[in-house]
Length: 99
Figure: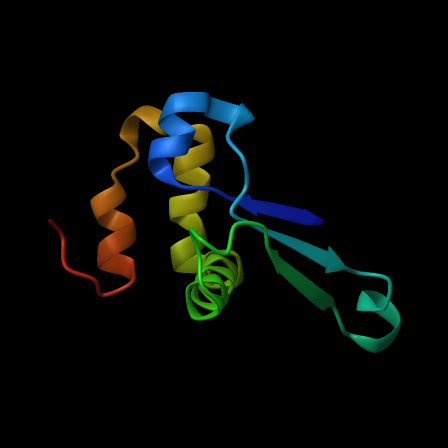
């Protein structure tokens, strides 16, 4: 997973995989084995849609779902059992109010 693209839900609903990214994240894994280090670069594409603090929160939150076994189960469910996926479970994992 060397890249992550973030876009808005409304843009994704309207354009699907053709939706323009608001923020891109690239992982450089060249030193992962030798130095136990992965460099990360995040670029905000649309500053009118996403601020620095929001982009940082998105990057950290996304990583938390890949680095935490319990949260990763939600990623797997989203990818493999889409019909069983509930976004409210993501909100609960993040201790956010379920609307």
